[in-house]
Length: 322
Image (cartoon, rainbow, N blue to C red; front, side, top):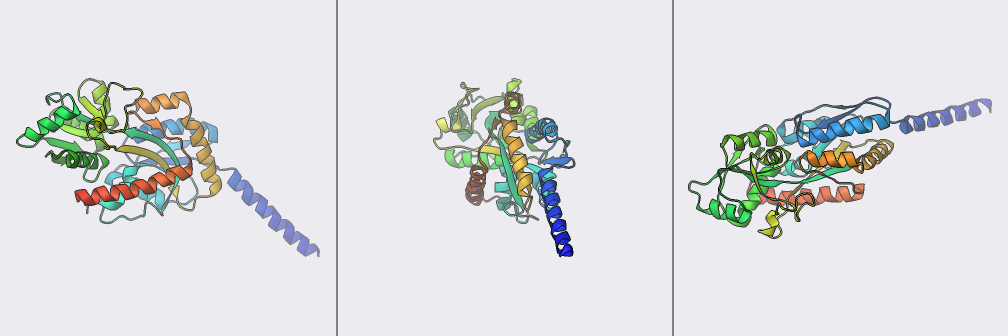
């Protein structure tokens, strides 16, 4: 009887220790991996998150940039990491919802090998032209593009990137002809090409919006459905092309199998992070990002919706990356 009591005590003690181990997450530094290089929107968000949340969680949050392959390198690293909540992926809908349709072969499944931790932010793109393009509005740009001979060049962050698909959708809706020039190095490379006069237009995010604010490039409209409260003077493309809308989102992901305790802790920290006014201000200054503080169910619904939506666009455009 004594041996049986001892066994029960050992089992009960192990259960308590096991529960404490989960309750004490995190017990070591957390690594967050943005999908892009330093000074890009996701990188800025990751470093802001690391500085704020690291203090609250009692462990350092280290940012490790892994750009390349349109975010596939960073996504795979996290998908193949241990499901313990210590290696996190800060990625966008481009990696989760677009790449699986664009790349003929991927080494991981974005829907089954990664679990959504929390939504983070949303951002509208802008249709941007270099100053020598005479168009001042979306309608004027469409009219000018229709008469341009040879067709104008437009740039994107690569074949199958969201910038690429956004412009191809714009071309389909308007019937204009533009020649696509894909760039490596993300939106920054496209912005540099615009400034150099190598291309005439792009649909881009934070990298080009910074140059617009500096007065070096001209924005004709945003890809949001409605005008931004902070930029009421900037129209939307939808005002000329009803129904046109392209928004990019940023989310935090972990390897599938990560404990519910770790996910719950991270989700709670993210919710507190996104309502802080200085965080909201810095997200906006990082390229017009807005906090996306919705439930995990809404986040997962958005992932599935965009996965199906972009699959249709990719099929229509015929984009494929081997």
